[in-house]
Length: 261
Image 1 (cartoon, rainbow, N blue to C red):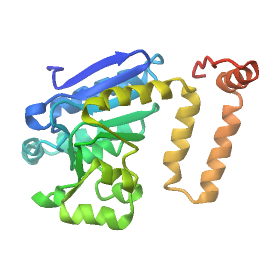
Image 2 (cartoon, rainbow, N blue to C red):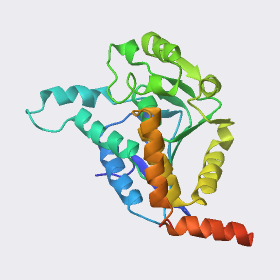
Image 3 (cartoon, helix red, strand yellow):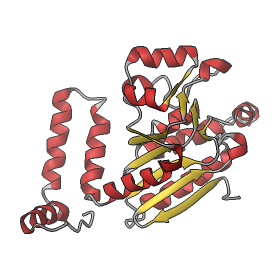
Image 4 (cartoon, rainbow, N blue to C red):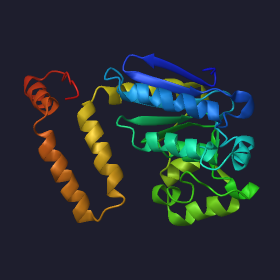
């Protein structure tokens, strides 16, 4: 299996995965999904890597699923994993990834590409990037969060607008809605995403992982249940090395040396 469809590199504690099917607008196919599944497991298990950047090459971040492969799944024998099954596995890996994920949207982001970006913890985008759901344009139904997750991240009426019209918005408009955290000039996006990742990588990995777990779970809990979850996690965290190191570093006026334990 060629790895050219997904580029993997590291810069110190930062891992970067780059979708690399530029002629196909980085649309997701079985080869990309297989490589993503492999690399995500590898990065999750490497304690030296603390933050993941997910981005694309060419004019698109990701234009969605390769529809040829989606349709091919209908002819597979019963019980055999198809494209949608593989998507569910990989998107599940991303949603439950223990480390911070930054999606750096370098260009067109639509349908499955938007659903992919919504798996990240933070989204930054190039000024020229356009972002939308687009499923309605092709009579396709979203299957990885378009209808289920988008209304949790932006106002419901705007989520419905994007779902029902199939229109795309600019990265600046999406920043106003709250989906995008930062917008950068196209030529500066890669460096800006890396700097953000490096800043986050200096924090305690175990604290970030626990914050991420509680914050993501809170959407499905009442306020009181979410607060209780936070308190349980705090009690556990008070026994960590990193909190002791952080407090000691503060008292000694030095940079903490977190170990993620």
